[in-house]
Image 1: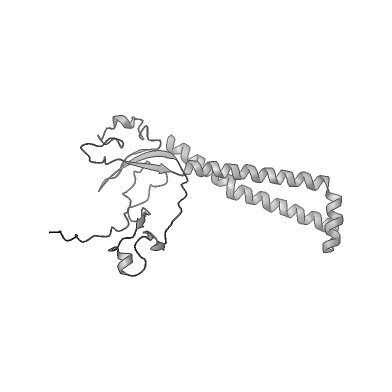
Image 2: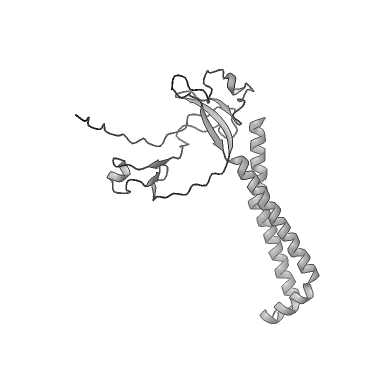
Length: 217
């Protein structure tokens, strides 16, 4: 005799516990301000399937109620390991930015809460969960974008200085522009490009490095 399958309950998006006051950027946050985004594989009894918003095998982004059809390509942005210990009602109890030491400098292998994230006791997972941090990798990408943009800007400047007369002659005839007008257009383009590179690559890189340095400190 086969047992009837139990009713499946769909988990709602999980609010984050209240972060500790000594974690930069989270001083004024509450559990209602942050929600962990999750990708959920839809099954036959999933709410999105019964509501006919998706079909079994699709993926649902819980925080946005978006449905993605399979296959879904996921691009990881980081390989930096960490760990975090959250408790209901207490919020953030302990955190490690590198998976080796916690915020107070104690080695994770000597966890003061007896919840080392790599140790399972009698098949039970530890309360401390492993995490991945994408900021470190994102900072490296932004730095390389800034360097490539700066090199392109310097290359354009050198080409313009060496071939300015030829540029004036060719493009002046094509668009009916005077050498002064062409110089002004190229100067404005270089200025805007330099501003773009600084605002979208260098400044975010500096901001991320400052945040990471403060967390490590």
